[in-house]
Image (cartoon, rainbow, N blue to C red):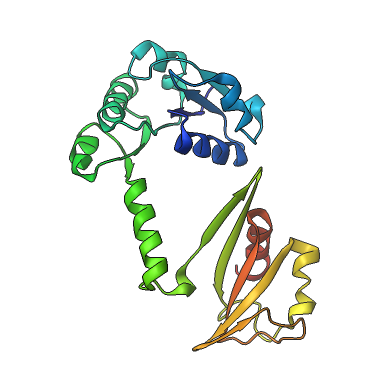
Length: 230
């Protein structure tokens, strides 16, 4: 492979990363020294022809070279041990100093180690998830700024909030937009100032001051954005 993405560690996070990459039609080489190949591929929902699994130790240079590190576009490491993620990053940068590296961090106290190791984008997944959960409960984050993602099998669904002002949606009647027919998406709510309308009728006329709540497949929402928001 060339211009592919290497994913190190295919536990819970790593498997989700692989599935997301395949949804974007990326070529992926996954590395894990303990994975059960049959169990792993049962959890893969994308195009398996674009996925190669290597059973090996990613801290070993030979394993990374076998995965095509010098030809790869990026490396994502999601191992549960920060020291291993750092060592993988160091080894990878030593073999290919241009490789773009994204790494999961299990303990934020180790952040400087990741930076020194050459990680381009460190992500503290546990901290991000905890903040998201607490903000949802306490309400410190305005609902109109929230975007939620739901993955079911090989499809990704989103909930998005769209500010109608300066779009092509103003003064349009919902039924005339033919959202289900054209995009397989739905307007599930409307926010206007402090008022919230759940499940607006098809005869509802969208106001320029409205914020509409959309639900549907990511592909449909992207096409909708191209037609009405750009």
